[in-house]
Length: 354
Image 1: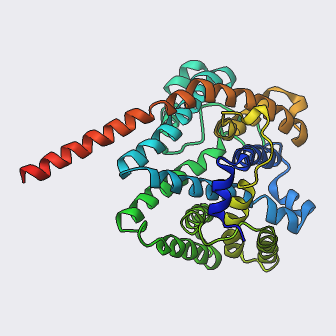
Image 2 (image 1 turned 90 degrees about the vertical axis):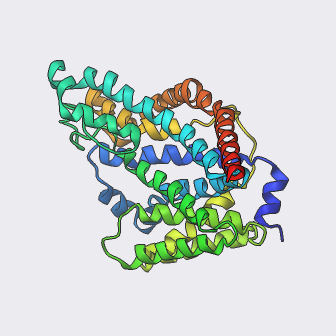
């Protein structure tokens, strides 16, 4: 039976991961369209029943499981945590900063109901800029006040601190030797799932942390875990049973294998994913575009029209983000490794002098 490691080696760079990122980013937009247009998530669950309860809550978890699997591979290629955290910074922050600045300095002044003098001097304007650092604030002065989700500029940014927390948690576990004893990652995943399942008021981002460590665990045990359709279907059945039994933690534990199995599929690439990753831009810009379309276009106030238009506009902004921000930022990788090398040389000199 082929293992995950063998499958990954056989297809080199699987197209499934690229498709999966783009599909998940698009599904996030679909999901938020129900809230943005005033339908509400409860109505969706009522309409789709148990299938909706299984499918939609898995979307963000799959994002984080995919991230955990790929980030663990990146960690193995880094000499120290200096380069690892540096690579995370140049991947996350430049695009995030651009989205926040465009929202605050372009979209906000264009659509605000407040006078521009009040807008630019309001505390809300200045606190919104903290989003660049991952300290999340949702409101800009006078923006989207009459929308069903009143006053919220970009609700989707709530996951940014959890993403940063995942990286910091991974770095902390590495410092205590988790790379030598990867069972620590499995223990972290199971502990988080138990907390999510049995503690009533556990933060909702806990499931993202569980999925992230699940992806890491699969990476470290990839030489033992099979890449197998029957196992994939079996895990789906278990996840479905978890929904029926209201065992949220069980569902979350299933997400990583479902994600990695799909990611290792290798369908033919189309031009959209040839040498580019538009998913992060879609993810960052989707919600604010949905809110803006609802405010400015009366015909974009039903969920399906709002979704279709948002996907088109968000794709354009995602292309801009990739071409003008993300890809140039990734060009700083060599600089990150040079900084790491300089730090290592300095540490060696200090060791010699002692």
